[in-house]
Length: 162
Image 1 (tube, helix red, strand yellow):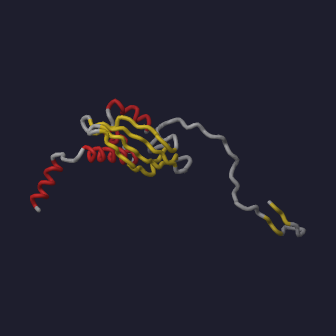
Image 2 (image 1 turned 90 degrees about the horizontal axis):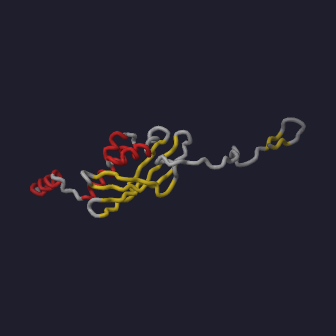
Image 3 (image 1 turned 30 degrees about the vertical axis):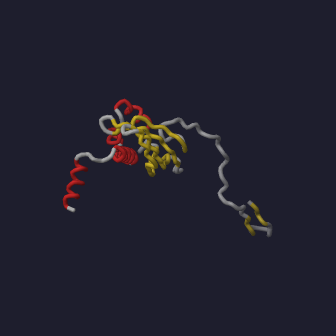
C-alpha cells in the first residue's frame, strides 16, 4: 500500500498527468482568473501572439461587465497537442443588471505548456468579448401594475378610474 502511494506521488511529481488533464487544469486556471478580474494572471495562459487581442476582448471585464459565473462545459482533445473548449459565461452590464449568457469556444495548443490561441462567441448574448452591440428599438415603458386602479369615493359618489 505504502509503495503504491509513493509511486503515485512520484508519477504526479514527474508530470505523469495525461495531456487532457493538463489541458483541463490550464483551461480552468485561465477562466477562473479571468472571471475574478485577475487578468494579469489569466493572460499568462494566453499564447504570446494572441495576448493583445485577448486583452482587447476582455477589456470591459471587471469594469463595465461583471462575470457572475464561468463553467467549462466541455473539452475535446484533437490529438495530444490541441483542444477545443466550450465555456458558458453568465454575466451582466453594471448599468443594466440583466443577467446574460454567452457560450464561448476556445482553442488551445500545448506548445511550451497549454496556451489559449483563440476564442469566439458561438451562441448567446453579444457584448461579452468586446463585440459591438447595436441598441435595439426603444419600447414604451412597461405598466407599473397588472390591473387598472379604480378609486372609489372622493366626492359626489362617482368612481374615479385610472
